[in-house]
Each structure stands twice: as structure tokens, then as C-alpha cells.
Amino acid sequence: MGKAIVALVGRPNVGKSTLFNRIVGKKRAILSDVPGTTRDRLYDEVTWRERTFVLVDTGGLLMSDEEIAALPLAEIVRRTREQALLAIEEADAVVLVVDVLAGMTPGDAEIAQMLRQAGKPVLLAVNKADNEMRRQDAVEFYRLGLGDPMALSALHGTGVGELLDALVEALPPTAEEEASAEEGAVRIAIVGRPNVGKSQLLNTLLGEERAIVSPIPGTTRDALDTPLQWGDRRIVLIDTAGIRRRGRIEVGVERYSVLRAIRAIERADVAMLLLDAAEGLTAQDAHVAGYIVQAYRGIVLVLNKWDLVPKDHRTFDDYVRLLRQNWPFIDYAPVVSISALTGQRVARAVDAALQVYEETRKRIPTALLNDLLREALQAHPPASTVRGHILRFYYVTQAEVAPPTFVFFVSNPKAVHFSYERYLENRIRQVFGYSGVPLKMVFRARQKEE
Image 1: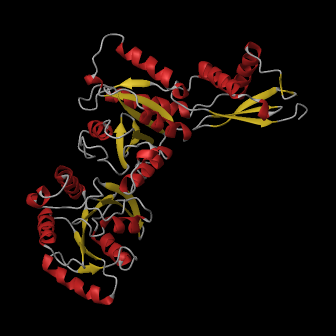
Image 2 (image 1 turned 60 degrees about the vertical axis):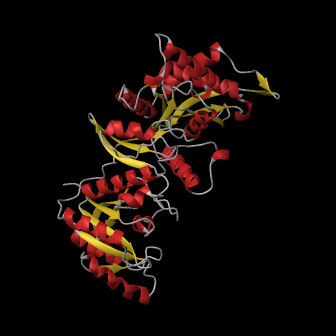
């Protein structure tokens, strides 16, 4: 079997996300006093006493339909419960987190009853036990019938090591654990402004509800990593929070969601930028595209909701022409039209992303590059002089892949006009392709006699 899965569950505001961050050693989960902040499942690998397992943070679990109905955004809270129940179902062990300050609540008892029926190992973590008196109060939770309560403070780290010791002992035996599922996998980030269908696309590709789908903008607040076997390729899909223009980012949770989405782009190999084809292009779309280009990540433009667009045989070509005219800075990006809701051509979008990934790894021999440079200089020489300096190109070489980085050795880097840089980039693309891949052009000084 693979790595064991451990789910953190509990009512809202008991400190699950704080405990998750403490255990994984980094701020993956959003911390907020607002109930329901953690809506989707967050996964991360944890190694403790030479045992590696996957820890899952879930949203606050409310079992009572009446309690949920009385809350704002009741539908999202109800879907959050479904996500938590899915995490419990797939888990090999469960940690129930309760709040010693609140004492044992009817909601805790309902969750405990459900966990007993699940028939899986359960550890009871009594959080916020920051002093001796509160640790003594933890004995109240014996009444849940889940064994010994383990008093701890996720905020300060007290008792967390003891919890992990007990957890490792409770995990089912496993063979030698396999290599990380993400090692060697292609990381594809699904990005875009709010409510363009990112989570719907993720769910359609997986064939299950991995992320909450809702017409309310901003429902996805965390970046979700999901391994997926795609033919003979292993990929990791990253669903992200919708990115708004900076001026429209609200203080609080959404701000951290945007930062997380930007980091997701930075750690991806390729970004699929979803656009609402029915609504048309917006400045926010261009803003998101700019983040991808700045990070030098591969890009595929995905026209979602294509089923809602009135069409004839020229509609797609007209849309692509509009994209190229409005966004010349990514005119190299492939365009795919899909419907995430119906599944129409979603596989083609992933295939396009994998092709872009291969392009990011392409390396061109130095001899071919210099042949191209000589032809480019003959066809369109640079300005003969700039501020009294004669601009000379000596040779070019590819220094890196992902992103492809081309280093030109010239007499005076400052004399290279941006339009000539663009010209050379276009010649490289004409000859060698690089569809969907931003190229890094570097100009360095070198004297001819060197």
C-alpha cells in the first residue's frame, strides 16, 4: 500500500488549521477566526519517527442540518461538511480536535458517534490546553468514548510530539513506502479570476468532487494539490483561489488566498489560464496572465463555458484573433475551448499543457542557434550605432531550460533595443517552436578579442 492518510476533523474554531500548520511545519492552512475559513481538504506529507503519512486538514464539521441552515452561506457550509466526510472516508486514521475552553459540546458528541461507526483508529486531541489547569480539564472528554484525551496546545506546540508518537503507533502497518507521488510528475496549476470554473474543471478531470463547486465567487480559498495518472504520465493538478486585481483584494482571507494562488503558479510547471468565453476578456484576465509570464511558467489559454457561446464555423478563429490582438505579450500561448461542466474537450486542455511542458524542457544545440543568429542579423541588422557605440553580436547559447534561457554575447548590452530583443525571440519561435513557453533573453558584454 502507499502512504497512510490521516484526517484532522472537528467543529469550527477548535484549532485544526493551527495544528495542521504546526505538524507540517509551514503555513499551508489559512488561520482566521471566521468560521468556515478552511473549506476544502488540504494535503501535506509528514514524516515522524521514520514513518511518512499524508495529513489532511478539513473544514469545520457541523453535523446538524438545523445548525447549518441557521448560518450565512449555509450551502457552502453544507458542502464543507461533505468534504470533511470524504476525508474521513479515505483516511486510515482520524484525529478529532476539540476545544478545552469550550468544553465538550453536543457537536463533539455527534462527531465522536460518527467516528466510532466508521471503525477507524481515532485519536482525541484536546486543543488550547496551554496550562496545567486546562490540561486537567481535558479529562472531561473521556465521556466521548474515544480513549485517552491528549491535551495539547497547537499554538505553542506543547503535546504535539506526544500526539504524533501515538498517531504513528495507531497507523496500519505498511510495506516500504513508495517514492513521493509528485516526484517526476508534471505540475499543472488551474488559475483564473473568480468564478470561471476552475474547481469544476478539477472535479471533471478527477471524476469526483475534489473541490467545492459554487457560483459564489471566492469559494475556493486554498491551493489544492491532487495527483492524477494521465495515460503514462503522472501529473499534479493545482486548483487555486480566484485572483482579482490588487485594488479589489479585500483585507483578510481573500488576500492570503491570492498570495497562495500566486505561489501555486510559481511552483507549477504549466498554468492553464481559464477564461470565461461567454463573458469575454477582462482586465482581470490579463492581470492573471501577467503573473504567469512574470513567473516564466508555461501557459495554455482555456476558453471555458464554450457551450454557452453562440457559434458558427468562424467563432473560434475570431476569438483566437481577438486574444492575439489584445494580448500580444502571450501570442505564443496555445488556445483550447472547453466546457468544464459537460466535459467537452477537457482532455485536450490537459494534453496541451503536457505538450507545453515538453517545450519548456527543449534544448537547442549551440551550432543551430548561431546559424539562426547569423541569418537574423543578415535579414534585419540592428541599429548600426546607439549613442556612438556599434552593436555587435558574437554568439548565442542556451544556458537553461524551464524556462528556456538564451544568452547573447554582444559588444554593448545596453545598446540592444527592446524591439530587437522581441525580433530575435520571434525568430527563435519561428524556427524552434516553444509554443506556450516564455523565453528568457539575456544579453552579456563580451569583447571580440575574448
